[in-house]
Each structure stands twice: as C-alpha cells, then as structure tokens.
Image (cartoon, helix red, strand yellow):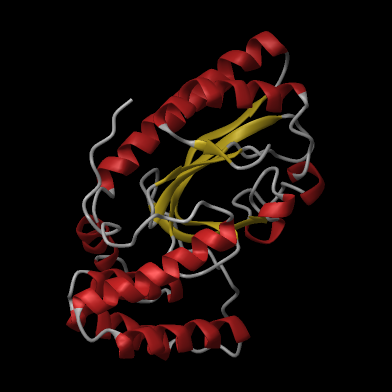
Length: 270
C-alpha cells in the first residue's frame, strides 16, 4: 500500500530520491512532518519549537552568514531555507529532535512541476547527524559548521541541476518502481522531448496499484499532461503553468515570464 510521500531507500551519503513532505507553510518551524520525518523520534511539538530559543537563534544567525549571501531565503521564521531557481529549489533543513536541543542537517531539492502547498524533499541527503546544544559558545561553532556545509551542498546542487537537460538525465536513470520517481522522470523526459522515455515512465506510474485518492489524482494529472504534450514547446508551456501554480501555493513570487524559464541557469558562485 502506498502512502503519500512514501520514502524510497537512500543511497548512502549521496543524493537519494525521496518524497519527503514538510510541514504546511503556516505552521512550519522545523519543516518535516512526523509522518514523513527522516528521524521518527522528532515530535510535532519539538518541530514547532520557537525559533527564539538559543540554539535556533544561533542556527538562524549562521544561516544568514553562509546561506543568505548565496541568495538563499529563510521560510518565514523557520529552520528551513531554500535556493529558488524558478522551476526548482535547493532545500535546506536544520532539523530538530525530540528530547534534546540541537540539529540535524538535511539538504535536497524540490521540483515545482506538481502543484502543492507545502515544501517537499524530492531529493534528500542527511548531511550531518544530530548535534546537541550544550551552551552558546559550543553551539555557535556547530551552527556555523552546519551552515557552511549546507552552503557547499547548495552550490553542489546548482552545479548538478544547472539545466532541465541535466535534471532529466539524472531522473531518467532512477528506478522505475517508485511512484514519484516515475512521475518526476516522466515530466522531465517530456520537457527535453524524449517522448519514448516519458511514455515508459508514465506507463510504469499508471501500473502501480493503489486505492489512495491522491494516487488516482496524480495519475490522472500525469495522463492529462502527457496527452497534451504534443510538442516540446507545448510541453514546456503546460509545465510552466504547473510551476506557476506551485509557486503561488508556496507563497513564492510570480515569475515575470515563462519564456526563459527552461533556459540554462547562469552559474552563480559564493
């Protein structure tokens, strides 16, 4: 039985494909919801801990020093940061744990072509294990190191996913036994005009059994999109509209034009 956002096995310390759902924007403090949290010991109460606590304040200061200069944005007053690239974002979470003050570090990526009102890790990496807060001086160093590591992963994600062609090549190599893997790979293949691969991935998606309403809805959406993908230009127009819906739902600014949305990004460095 599928569950929405069910995690797939991760590949060591490398990028792993996972549909990791985060807390809705209105309540996000430590973004992972208990249902899909990579650390099952994290409680919702701990996740919603005030960011004015000492260790969260130090994490925010460190992120402002190392992530903000890259152009990363903090989601409200949360411990979640993102690097917006129009149709995708690199994602950073300083994740708490129940019972102890401190933080893990999770970094990944989210593709914006399936409309949703909450942040999701489509790609996920546990960059650092839990580091416990003992005092301000000790944790200031920890926070700085975590933020530096997050910044290096953000730069690596920019290089790895610097074009839709690069993302499509990456996603098209993923296994065909995962629901969201097939959805993401099918969309990405369509965006670069590889209709044969897209057809294979969407057929694999349709063949996955589940009675869940969200699965049926996603399958129907994928089928309607694929049936409308009459050319690469048309595909990019339709998926750009999906991206715009996601951005609106996430509270991100509207893009001025979809014309250059799929153009290779200009390389940004620290």
